[in-house]
Image: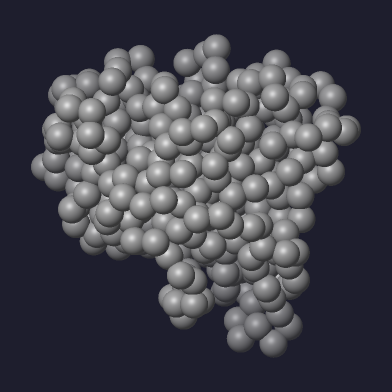
Length: 400
């Protein structure tokens, strides 16, 4: 979905500036947030203005990207109580207009992506701030194309390769597949050489992950907006088609795979705005359908595979952060879902956290999620300026 934020909503929120070290203040979960029975939601990090992507170092430091500030904040839980007491700028001074995006800890470095660069940074003198910042890929090497649209750059380091993706430059750009390097997943060697096309027909996947115990690449892809605009016209009869179509997608991305965008959505449903495409049936024949469908316009934004034991029966499942969108009449998303897996494939879904207080009032917009060292789930909220922790406290859980 297109990002839609009302900055007036943020103005009333008091936030600690991420430009200097600070001590996180105690904070409460907003009243009205629904949490599944047997689980507790608490605030792990408070006061970072519009936190987005998350990455954990092996020793437990939590890195939080702040796109609007061009910074990455290192957060530390010194006493192990689940609250990160200190916030220190690890990387700072990056241009905010190129957006600080995906991150991953790999081989002693924090790798991070911007629209026009992929870099790695590390702290060699122990002061908590990066003193080495090396650009691995620059704007002349990276697939970027025209500015605008979905400019979030995904980043994954796996198997000695860098994987990256930038989404569609519009809602659904109808152009030949070789006309743009966007809407595709590309890979590079770790030194930035050996550029290869991995997959195509991808609208906007902001985070790529590997399913544990495999070499499979997975991601959640945003659905398009205004699916039936031509049919619904002035919307005097509402938007009975657009409200429910198309679904967001949980995809397994394979090398050489084509995933349908912009001509096909969901399980090979034609994009109603592009029915005149003469190659539509050709595309449908080769398109790979999603492994799982999520609600239309939920803005399923990021995911993490669970590998721990702290949440019973959850090993191998996926947790998805849904930021919520603007295109449905009734708000949808704005929460955390758990996708149940068996034998490497999804088969069910459980809502875990819901930030929709009513049809018109939202209390949070989850962006990214990751597993904490103790097995709890951490997720960022760029609406409430928090990172939350979801912890199992006892009770019924899904059975495999």
